[in-house]
Length: 166
Image (tube, rainbow, N blue to C red; front, side, top):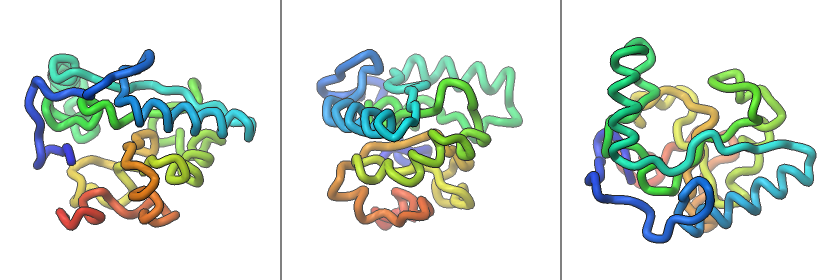
């Protein structure tokens, strides 16, 4: 569990990062299966962001504080980003970003099928009080099939709720 309330050290990172996005190896394998399945359904899934080091996250957060303070709830401080674990990915179709992404074929497909590959929508609608992060229809966290199967199909359960941390 990584969040603003549950931070990790600057030295933490994926044990065996792999691929262009430097994801945890199990995450990378599940992502490859999921993107292939989406492609078979005629849907394009592109990784906008994968692994981010503590240093990269700090630079991103500091830049957002200076240039987009009104949107800071979309940015995790260093040590509070799941991207640092190599278990999280921001996904899109390569064209439509931000909240409208949920209405694209990619967004709809991911929201319907991601759990079948071990991923959960990490920051669901109307759950900011629990997660500390505003709704992000693009941010998916790998938790494995055993756990993702227990999340509701409406993508409204948070990891905090699932773990009893809310």
